[in-house]
Length: 85
Image (cartoon, rainbow, N blue to C red; front, side):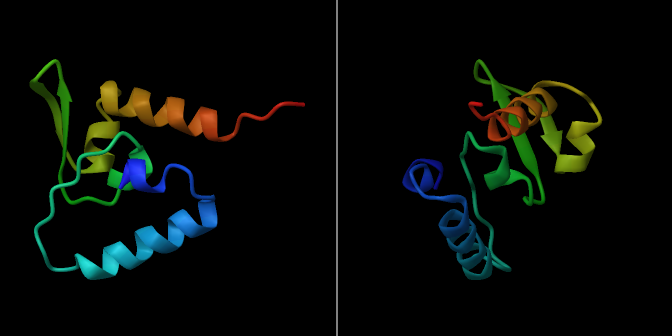
């Protein structure tokens, strides 16, 4: 859903994400995404780099490894708070 929601404002994107969360409850779903917000609530996250699994586990677990996932989350968080003054 990254691409489909990319041009939405935060409020509408949040409503869509919440609706999808209710629809997929108790189901197995594979999510492929670039936005960390899209995958943070997943039970298991698999991070690929050049076709190889480099990290996997819950968001909290792989954040502690301070690897690719943590770096991507940090960069996206920084860019969300960026503004022209």
